Length: 316
Image (tube, rainbow, N blue to C red; front, side, top):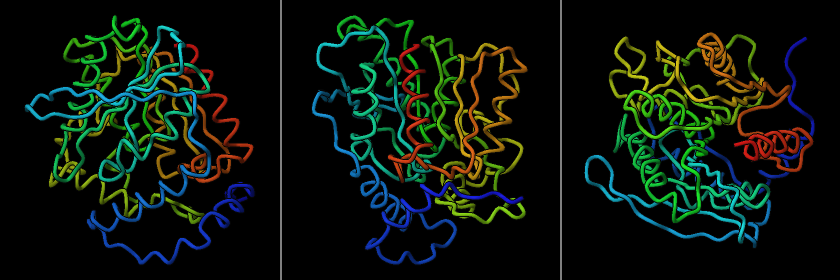
């Protein structure tokens, strides 16, 4: 029996996209068109649910390795001080979206758990290729540790989290922090992460609804890695799946849908973490495509995924 799309997701997506307008096919390497489409799509998806009124937002800045200034956005829930915190990297294939587009989803995590989040406005490819997105997030991690006392955060209870391209960035961030003897990371939370630049060949028979296509994936990796993409010299600070030694990485939570083009690389990454004795929780969500919970947040599988994510966040 072939794969099938969850009926609630299918119905919700059809309803959501009524009135969105026709999307013209985008050529491989067309970053500009993808930014316009994906930013509009994310704004529409994330506005389906209200932004919680009990979350406070404050902006800070830090300096990156190359001297640039980037914004760090700190989200807190009232007087909640669990001691833990999460550094978050937004998704959209390393090439699109913005920190502020994710205000709603990040605030909902904070409202549901009380765990404060620090979102990093990392710079994106192709203008800023690898490893800049990762080193920007590393600068954010260093800032969070340096300011832990005033933010009422235990520096030993800081996790990193990201979705899609952001999931790939924080996976590489965990590797980078380990290799550079940087701040300890309590957990890496990888939501349908973009990990392997070699994932460019469509799976036979895999023809269901795919919101992040193989053409999009080729475009994102090409923008990030340039001519090195797919070759033998890609660093794990660019594509985490290129890592050889998985020992000493932080415990992981990995979640991916079975209809996601990142499914196999997510499973393979989790297996390599297991083989290196890194405690890992892996979820493969049946009948779920990429970003399923963002497209249809009220679906049962979306609510179950949300409950799992909240449980992990509360365990930091």
